[in-house]
Length: 315
Ligand SMILES: *[C@@H]1O[C@H](CO)[C@@H](O)[C@H](O)[C@H]1NC(C)=O
Ligand SMILES: *[C@@H]1O[C@H](CO)[C@@H](O)[C@H](O)[C@H]1NC(C)=O
Image 1 (cartoon, rainbow, N blue to C red):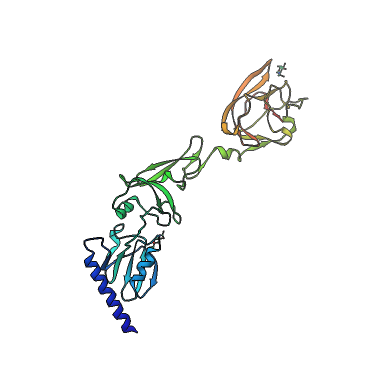
Image 2: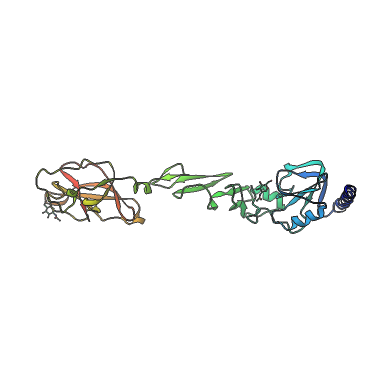
């Protein structure tokens, strides 16, 4: 039995060596005494390399295989020696066999992602600048990204999988990319915080005497407040008053109200004027505040104004 094996192996080898010689002028298919290392995705014990040829043709990932003479084993690779010439090394116990038929171009399907643009160019002999599948951007998954074949640069920003924050701008550069937080946000670009956080990081104004309906009886008080983000809640109402209240309301002398109305969510953070009604003028005193619509409520960036004034709430 063993003898039979050896004979068949020698026979096959002889055939293949013959093929190598005969095919030297055409497509180079098998190369004795060489192997491609480092790209083997599966192996198979098989008496005849012919079966390996068949198996390789049926797997989109298969670009080439090594045949291990002493072990009667084939090692399927997802690269060719053209793509990775540095991994093509001599080995007297193997021969290298490039897929002869229907080889899938590197980077053309998600199952066969490339690592660099240069690799695609080397593998295919030529390549045009367009989107290819890559594994190098996000490990474990294939992503489609634009390849500039002139500069061999992958445009990571063309993918959805770059690691910039949703509130950041992605900037492509050679070999890499940058993330910069959008105006109004701060952070390193991979994480940006700002506008949204204000909707979660605020203090509350909840006292019933802050409402415009509250009549100041005696000992009016003043706001010693902020600077910081505040939300009107509970007995103080749901938002700042938006029309001029009468004097001596919300437990102060000069009640404050928001002039210009509230922004929509899409408006983002806006600057508004707060007016204090005093001495016959609805806007006797004014101060600029920041306002943001957080969907179901508002937040205000408030600071102490002075005098006997307060920011008043309403429903
Ligand atoms: C290609 O083969 C290598 C092993 O050499 C493996 O780590 C990698 O995951 C394979 N790629 C695919 C897409 O199968
Ligand atoms: C503002 O205050 C004045 C008194 O200074 C008052 O006459 C007026 O009614 C107030 N405005 C409103 C809209 O209530």
